Each structure stands twice: as structure tokens, then as C-alpha cells.
Amino acid sequence: MRILIVDDETLARAYLVEQLAVFPDVEIVGQAANGFEAVKLVDELSPDLVLLDIQMPKLSGFEVLELLAERAPAVVFVTAYDEFALRAFEVHAVDYLLKPVEPPRLKSALERADARLRNNSGAPSVAAQSQALLAAARPPGVKLDRVLIREESKVLVLPVERLDYIEAQDDYLWFNADGKRHRKQQTMSDLESQLDPARFVRIHRSYLLNIDRLSRLELYSKDSWLAILTSGAHLPVSRAGHARLKELIS
Amino acid sequence: MHPIFSQPARLALYFGVWLIFGALLAGVLAIGHQTPLDWALEFAIPQTVLLGVLSLSTWYLVRALPASETPMPRLLGTWLGAAIVLLAIWLSIALLWGRWLALRSAMPALQDTAQRLAPLLVFVGAIGLLLAVLGHYLLAAFDRSRRAETRSLELQVHAREAELKSLRSQLDPHFLFNSLNSVAALIGSDAAAARRMCLLLAAFCRKSISLGREPAIRFAQELELTETFLAIEAVRFGERLCPRFDIAEETRNLSVPPLVLQPLVENAIHHGIAHLLSGGEVFIGARQREHLLELIVENPFDPEAPKSRGAGVGINNVRARIDTLYGHRASIEVDNRNERFRVTLLMPATPLPIAAAAPAP
Image (cartoon, rainbow over all chains, first blue to last red):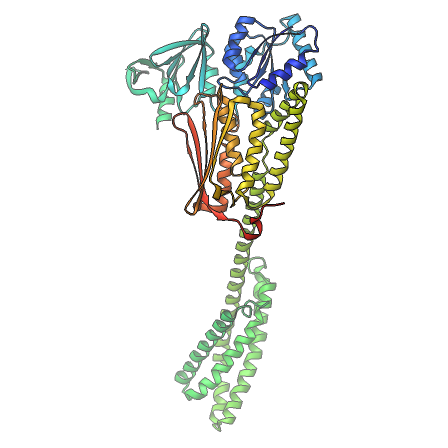
């Protein structure tokens, strides 16, 4: 089994290397000290399993998983202590290890990962639920504060306050910010549930608007309106969307 | 203890009121019943004071029959009975007193006057008694509400103490487990360093427990605790963590609440340095500005770092404690402009009590 170790602490990586040395069929293909490096190394090395720390500079372990999406290999999270993350792991049946990692637990986590690799389609992929996991690991009341988008080999971090609006198209969302648009595979309802409802309004089946960007509303036909944004963009507003807008503004 | 006897001022006020009552009664007798004024005063004032003394006994009934908890028929019946007994006693004494006064003044006509006054006396006595009973009930209610107030204040003080204790004793589990992880890693590669780390951890836990128990400690002790904490974190973060101290000598012997500096440094590391790929400097400053002690903790941070667990807990914890201890005399300010996070804590520069000024052996 080819393993990538991701942790920002040198000693923590060294400990895992040492513990993994006793398994004859384990090969450590690389080590990453932060989230960006981890995403890059997974692409380059395509490991079978990633041992992924949660608290890291730049990107958290959850965000790394979200960015890897369908390309993600098997993942076992490694954390010292994080009560919300642990609850999320339990709910979503995600494998995790607690620092300092106990050898028998490491062994059984490796065995489970190995079993999944063998029958391939076995348990549901962790990556498929990365969004739900990310949401569940957030402390209650804390909303999504940034959106991560992969473009080619680059990782884009978009703070939500920079977003103008989001448009849904087929299986994708287009994030409009700073005059550019960025595509990401995600559903509108999933995104909407993670954003702060006092800032982002679903003005239309296909449009989610950052209320700060609204300049004015124009009546378009009997039951529809146009939202004119500060950037000059025009977005359709449905009847239900109009009601939601009015409720938020009043 | 009778509530009227419990305070001299209450006793004086109580009998003062009865004296005025007596003077009014004398006035009524002199004007309405054409008795000589001196006789009327001599008759009425001792009698109203006597009624006042008799009325004091109603306190025991007031206590036995709380107005809000006693059924109305029982309340009325008991008080009616008591009033009849008290008034009968008082009236007999009053009549005897009137007769004796008449005999002594050698004005036999006045003997009958006293007899004729009986209905008026019953009326006046009943009103006096009624007022006395109501007064006692008011007093009882007043004392009860004051006791409740005292108790609620006591409860607040206890709650605050408990809160302080629990705030002081928060040891971050994340810190503990990460440190143990470092020890586990070092044992394989550098046993001596692992041992040093164990000793540092033990020292840190011991100090934070023992200092946390004290209401106030020397600032030098807080600094020592902070240095131990930094030494542990230096093992984890390696070169990413560079502490820099600027401590004015005169601050070392000031008295501070325990764990005011260390949580701020912990915050600087976990929400600042830990999110920076190449780390940075944690600046720790202390100086005295007139009658205030100023503590500064400053570190670089990544404004785009992922929201981390428990951000602000350490600062809020320190803020809650200095608020409780000093109120508006202390302040804590946070400045996070230009990717630098700076916490400034101002609190009264309290000199150590003489006995504690000598460093512990």
C-alpha cells in the first residue's frame, strides 16, 4: 500500500513514519507539510491512502479532501483533539486516528483501508461526502467563510464576502467574484445550506445572490423581477425569490 | 429577636409614633370632652405607650400567621380574638388609671368622665392596634426581602468564585495531546529530548495547577509559566516559533491574577503561528505605565487561514476574569490590522503584599 503522510509538524510526521515501518507492504511515497502540498502530491503520486492531519496552515484536512473530490484516495484523518470533527467522523463513519496514534489502531485502520482498496466499490467513498463532512465538522452556528475551487493545478481560495452571486448550471456552480467566474462541482442546495442566510439569498432556482451586491430591483413582468447588481449584472428574480428578498431587507 | 428591638432607631421611631398618637388622643379629650388639658395628657400618653408595649406582643402572632400563607377565616378569627383580649386588658388598665388620676387630683367629677370615655377608648385602641399589626406585617415583609437580597448577593459571589476557578483550570486538550504526540515521536529518535519534554510538561501542569489556585501571584511566576509553555511549543513547532521578550524589571514584582499572560501567548501560537507555513515571532512585552501594568502579546497571522477551533477562547477567558476582578479599571484590546494580531492588556499595577514579596524558596 502506497501512503502519503500529511501533517504540518515534523515530529508528528516522523512518528507516523516510524510506526508505519513495521508493516512490510506499506510504502511511504511522500510527506506533505501543508494542505496545498498535499493536494499537489496526491495528484503527482496518486497514493492509495492519505493519513491526513486536520489543523494545518492554509488548508484544513477537510478542505484538502474537498479539493481532491473524486480524485481522492482512501483517507484516514489524524487529529489530536477536535470535538466537532470527532462527532462528524462518527456520523459519517469516517476512519480517524487520535494522536498519539496507538499501533493496534493504526494496524486496524490500515487493514480496513486495504479491504476497501481490494473490493474497490465497498464502502461509500469519503470524498463523496466531503461537503457534508466539512459542514458537520464546523462548530454549530459557524457558517462557511470561504469557497475552495480548483483550477487546473491551482487552488483558489475565495472568501464568501468577495462573491457577487452564484449561478447553477447542470451539475456545476459558477462562482462570480471580482469580475471573474469560477466553476465548481457542487449542488445549489448544498451550498445554500452552508452559507449565512442573512447574506446569501436564493433569488431564483438557479441564482444565489450576495445581498451586499444588490443595487436595485426592477419589475420585469407580472410575477418576475430583475435584480440589478452594483457590478451592473442583471439577474432574474422569481416570485418566491422576491418574497425571500423582501423578508430579508425588511 | 423582635424586629423593633433589633435596632435602637426602630424602637425610638415606634414609641415616638405612639407618643404622637397619645398627644392627639389628649387633644381630642381636651377639646371634644372638655377635660383639663394636663389631665388629658397625663391620662392619654401613658395609656398609648402602654398600648404600644402591648402591641409589641402581636409580633409573635405576625410571625406565626404569615399573611400570604394563612387562610383568611383563620387569620381574621385569630386576630379578632387577640384584639379583643388585648383591648380588654388595655381598657381595664386605662379605666383604673383614669380613676386613680381623678382621685389623686381631687376632682371626683373626672371619675365619671373616664367611664364615659370607654367607647371612645375602645375605638381609638382598636385603630392603634390595627396600625401596629399592619406595621409589624410590613416590617416582617421588609426584613424578609432584605434577607432574600443578601442571599442572592451571596449566591452571586459564590457563582463568581466558581466561575473564576473553572476558567483558570482550563487546560487545552489539543495542547496536551499534541505535546504527548511529540513525546511519543521523540522517544524513537532522541530519548534525551523526549525526557526533557516530559519534564517540561510536568512542570507546566504543576505550575498551572498550583498558580491557578492562588488569587494573585508575582508577575515573575506568570512569566516563568509562559516560558515553560513556550519551551514545550518550541519542541512541536521547531524553528517556526520565535519568542521575543521585552519585560521591564519593575513589573516582575507586581501582583497579577494567575494565567493572564500564558493564555494570550497560547492564543498567539495556535491561531497565529500555527497557521503560517514558515511561522513567525511572538512578541511578549510588559511595562508599567504610571499606576497601570501593560501587557502586550503580538504575533503575525494569516487572515485567510481556515477558521480554527476555539478562536478567541483564550482572550475571552482572560477578559472575563479581569472584568470580574477589576471592572472598568482594566481593559483588553485587540488590534488585528496589517496581518499582525496584537493584544494589549491594561490592569492596575498592584504591588505585592509584603509577606509575598520574598520569592518562594
